[in-house]
Each structure stands twice: as structure tokens, then as C-alpha cells.
Length: 120
Image 1 (cartoon, rainbow, N blue to C red):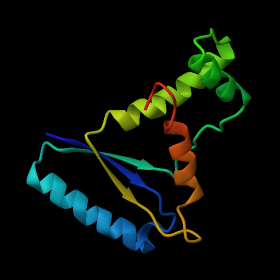
Image 2 (tube, rainbow, N blue to C red):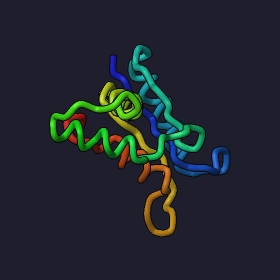
Image 3 (cartoon, rainbow, N blue to C red):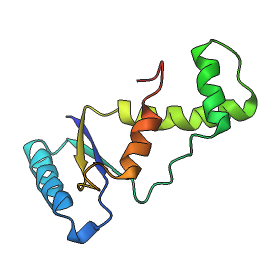
């Protein structure tokens, strides 16, 4: 059994070629072993936290071994929850469109959240 985190980043949904290809992959993945798990993370339906002052302060307090305020701790726990979800997968599948010759801003936001010192 394996856990796949499917990160969907296309806003076009039923008109998305990348989602169609990803769904084919997921079908084959589950067919290979019916006990394989798939967790879907739709970045267009998820409200990701902003990396605001409390989160930035908490990040630097963690980096310097300092004690965070209760607001900073709460803000940092939101980040660690997102990171834990990412780290708990055995493999990853991303479906995303080319977005202005780059990646969608929702994916960039997600990458910025999970790329934290001491967590990933």
C-alpha cells in the first residue's frame, strides 16, 4: 500500500487536460493495488494561510530557538499542519497548466508554505 498526494492546480476542472491525464494515472495507481490511497489537495478550493507577520515572526523564532507568542504559535501550527500533510505522502502527483509561462500562483504559494526550515 502506498499513499499518493494528488495536488490539483488547474482552475478549469472538467476542461483541463492535465486533470484528465492525472485521473488516468490515479486509476492505474489504484488498479495496481486497491489498497493504495489517494489524497486530493485542490489548491483552488483550499484557503491557504497568508505568510503574514505572525507567521514570519514565528518562522524566525523557530530558526533562532526563541519562544513564540501564542498568536505566533497558532500561526506556525497552521504551517506545520500543511507541511505534515505533504510529508505524510509516499509519492506526489501534480496536475497543473502552464500559467503565463510558469506555474499558477496558487502552487507557488503552496511551495512557499511547505518550504520551511526544520520542517522540510
